[in-house]
Image 1 (tube, one colour):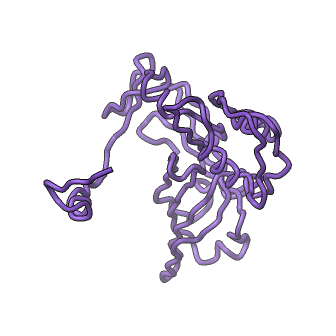
Image 2 (cartoon, one colour):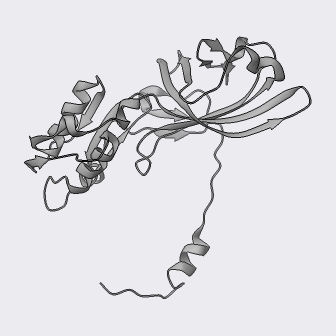
Image 3 (tube, helix red, strand yellow):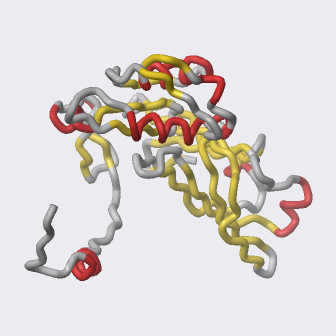
Length: 243
């Protein structure tokens, strides 16, 4: 499907291309990446004919693959998720509206982290796990050599534990996340604040961005500013705190 006249989009559920499936109406899809929720998720909404379920099953772990190409941006990407939740199911007269959620296709993150225990730095643990599973990696070196043990934690939980105690210097603050391309990041937040990154793009409201000037195009933005409850929660204007 052609989007904004420059993007070629295809979405597959297992082997079925949604845009070639008879009677399927695609509504929208969103991919969310976040430091606070370090494993990317996606949501998708579509309308399918009542009989569509007869030939296939949407079950836990169903593969959802998103392909997007854009010659203008030199983009040729593929993102793979696994279905983990059907958020909403509305049965209508001849169709079913379905709203589903998927999580990044890295199930190994839920396996035991104890295979990666080592005496070394926390960044070396991240490097070891990235190398084991063939993940791309963008990992800052740390100065925190000790024995790191996962115990009862899975790999995702082990990452969070490592980031909580990882140390570069007296100003460091470590965080980890995966992006939609399965790149594992373990970064020092203070370094990112102090140094301008080459990977930073400017967002411009245009369907044809200028990639040479690091522009990323968008057509619209929706947000909310929830200052009121925060002010009340923190004693309103003129409040004070002591530390």
